Length: 264
Ligand SMILES: [Zn+2]
Image (cartoon, rainbow, N blue to C red; front, side, top):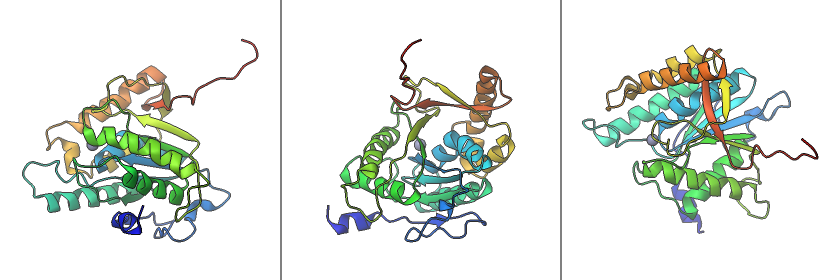
């Protein structure tokens, strides 16, 4: 790959929590202190995907002492039927920055066009570079069973990116890093053959997370889907099944729950 290709895809914006300071990708990440409980990286095709379907787990991980970063592959600028693309993209970006900050997380973005996120070597390596920079122990992203092509592509991009990020012999700007755990989020658009196997108690952070979601205009249903009702009801329903007041359900990546035993 030529430099010109990789240079096209810059992090167009980064934000950081007040405690972490401004996140600078060329310097040592602020969360590398030994007291840290590890980083989680939530990778969504669009900002709303990250906060609505992955944000509960991110908020809880932060409350548990870890750090969180949201990566949006696009701004989701084509998601509103009457607001001009540039204007809506900026609204989406600002909503993501503010909501991430509200739960103590960082937000970074790549600038692929909404509905046209490509699955190729360039996009896979761009996400690889973010993984190597953030150094997450956990990745949460889309499940592949989606009607939305950006979500399907995001799933495949992340598979490649995680592999590339961990490949020590692949020289990039940052050294290799392998994210040891990966989960797929429960997203209303990605439910084909989604089989939840992991429930996380988010009761402690539920109100904070919902308040963060409400920063997005689309949360209230103005783009045609009642995100607020859906994700609040889902957290209650998953909580009922898991015997927690509120929960999110996730699907572990294949092989992650393999048991190695000598006898039953
Ligand atoms: Zn989406």
